Length: 152
Image (cartoon, rainbow, N blue to C red):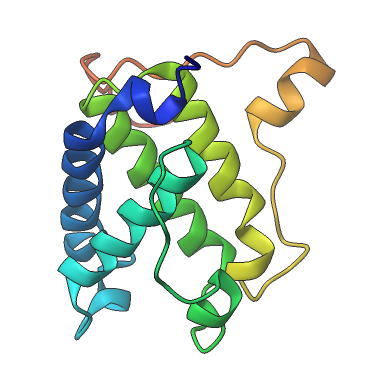
């Protein structure tokens, strides 16, 4: 039997991650307004179906095509990136399997042209540029103290 990425995260954990992800999205100061008046439970249910499906579960996505679902919205690259960062943080906080994280992020990034309106504004991140420049990106330590000070 082949073990899928869905098997590696499991139904209960995927539902918990998606529910927490949407809770964070709606209260985010940068993009939360985009969810005003939306049925959060319905959005989370569609996200679960969509994600479970591409992770290998036998779950049918019952939502509209991505381009259709987002076409009437004005979503810019920065807003897309903010959502992506919240997804990364949520998966990290839930200790999601690294392969599942990678697949989920890659799949999300592949959808960017169908979601955003500012095509061509994508920035090359350190992750993308790093190998070209010989840089290894290391995530910041969330427990490290932040140093504030004046420039001299």
